[in-house]
Image (cartoon, rainbow, N blue to C red; front, side):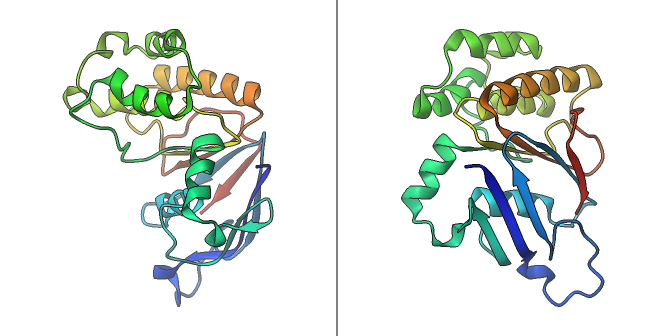
Length: 214
């Protein structure tokens, strides 16, 4: 996948609202593979909805979202699943980790589907992100910031054309945010992947090619 395009896309709940000012909603916007995008938003303007629309978890929107010119509404479920497995990654704002599983088990669930990362690579990222001691700890006993780092590693355990990151550093200190940014930049360059980051305040410190207001 090389291009994600939005054409006059708008959450259905926003239909009928006057005076929507946005670089994304009700516009024609294209995200290109290999580029980095920051979408800045106020709370309640639909940034998590946007990520869910692109990822295919929700379809309560007007307009068209297309991958390489194909309307994603027409994709059968099997194709959506394959895209999520081989092309499109996601770090959800609410993380969607399994509290009863350990940090490694949460990552392993994803990696088993793709076989994309070696265990030693995952361990290296845990060490760099300061959570090596949480490897065998159940996620439910970890802080939200620690969980964010686990979810970040999990998001990288697959082939990627694009990766969506919804407020990935909301609970991280600047040092860990910098480490996350470095790892993401390195992996995006290796894979030629596009990166789409959302934020309502604290931004993942990347060299963005374009910044948009939602």
